[in-house]
Length: 323
Image (cartoon, rainbow, N blue to C red; front, side, top):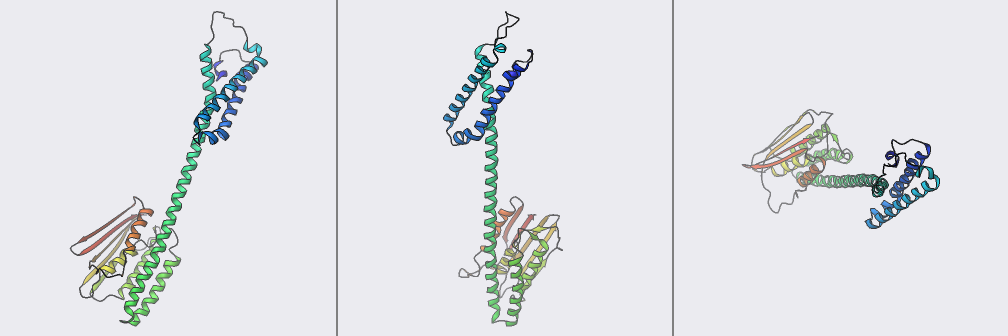
């Protein structure tokens, strides 16, 4: 800045050194002193007054040192007579203000850069912590769902052992295939929708073995589009719930399952007659639907709709997901 203010005067090497190189050296010292030491040691720990005092002392020292250098090494430059004796120089106060501002600029610049870097680092750490928490919670929900599914399936098999041993054997074989998918193919973040459809078809076939002719099951699935991938095991809880509450031993009922896809959007609708369970029925804890809603909130924020409706004895659920 001193060099810029001297614009219009005869340029020479002494003026360049005195009014540009020496101040730039001092600016650099102030900048790096703050950037690498003072900001971390005083400003960020909230020792603001000490930080300001140290910088004021440093600025005063470098201003004094600059004047001493000019007096010792550049006497002719400092005392060069003016050709126009009537022309007055700038007031000393203005000169000091300009000097203070020019020396304060590196301090402010270092604070701005250091603060921005700290904010970026803090933001990155915050996002990493959120992502880690998300992955941990999703893993917990997935592990929670697997034994829940297995427990419900074992209850179904148990009910078949005395009624139809052959069906029970076939059910165990089918359950083995389902559990293989649960254990080995659902540990990834996303799976092809076609594999989820295959899994749901097998599960529906498994559940048909334990229901009577009074319950009609209708299902419609699209041809699996390999380009569509989705989080695993999102729909199975809804199908489980339909077979749990939509089957009666002495009343006719219908379970209707329909899935459609449109570009990257998956629509899943399931309807079933609703037969409320007795209070002492412990065949399910409702953990599946709670698990599903939590996973949807974590995996597809603002990208899904989940609607439930009970009307005239029919329970209807519609789930729409933008993959």
